[in-house]
Image (tube, rainbow, N blue to C red; front, side):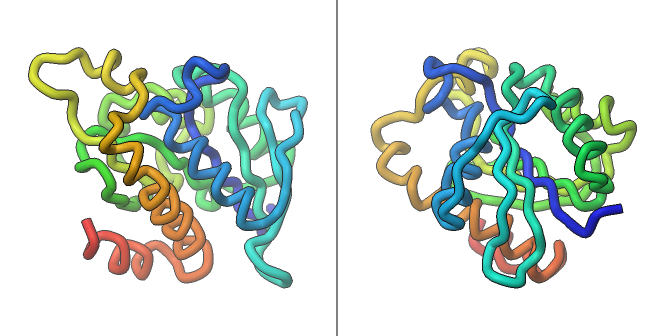
Length: 193
């Protein structure tokens, strides 16, 4: 097995979804790509992929944004894990989380999917739930708004002003998880939430 990490930003393809809450995982990967100075390229596993390192001599990273819709993210993720020989324990899914307030970031390993179709499909395709998650808080829909409609809407103008800080925090959380392990990353980022 490879010592690389596969970091997957969940979202939907196409410009109409690019700035929605559901695509915050892919926005975080764009931030990581900017930090490493790399560019995504299309991979045969139906994903945009960037092979990079956080710093010279650091662990190898495969950053991936599936080109499929959220609810069929598992196929590209499993395909990339197989292609690169990466064990599920070294996969990080970065995704939107309605059960966490906007602008908070939390991390976990395994567990339930909380109704998140992208995670559900990943778990099915990988035949395990034992992969890391960086959960990016987008908050709950207001009033009686349908959850699906809420996550497919762009961030509000107030949220949009705070979004760069949230993406920065989530990218930091990914880096901290890879460099220092889950427990230390949880202690650092959960204290802020």
